[in-house]
Image (cartoon, rainbow over all chains, first blue to last red; front, top):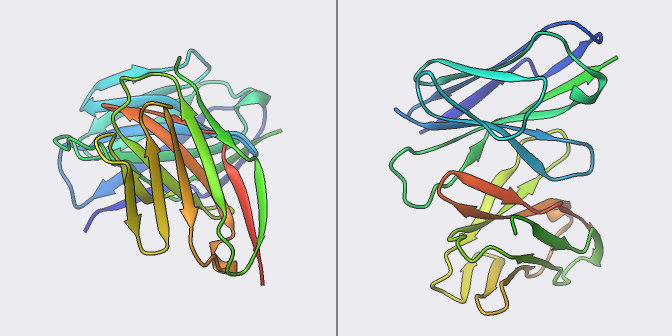
Length: 114
Length: 110
């Protein structure tokens, strides 16, 4: 069965510091990978998606970037965090060949920027 | 055109009641409509989903009703239990892209 991991689970960072959040998927090959942000009490906003190694599409211009160095690894980064980057970051995957594009979410990372 | 409007924002029902959560979309290109359940501090979990070629789908106590002409769909939870207390999100999808509703916080009283 497939499993998606995210770490760290929680993170407190000062404004202006760098960020690296990691997501890995097990039990599948060639997944589509996604990064979402969830602000408190709000829905999920798609930040980036990737259909393959090195292929990243950005949905929202912002202070963040994403990379996919390996097939099942997705990384969310920032060079300098802003207060507005605080939120709950969720990684998700879907089968690359699925017609239904069911997306499955990881446990999330709670980021607080002070 | 890319919005998904979800209501109500919050909902309180007694145990055994049938909470109903509604969503409306605008873009007729959407072809997949999932519902997710999220507990505090956890990632959303896929609950049930429907495609626009059917009007209703049932899985256990959860039912999706879909009205293609009205561009609306809803989630019904039969015989609700305190363990169903969570936030529920609808979404509309085309290919990779999901547009999520803003969520409904459900509380089921014992």
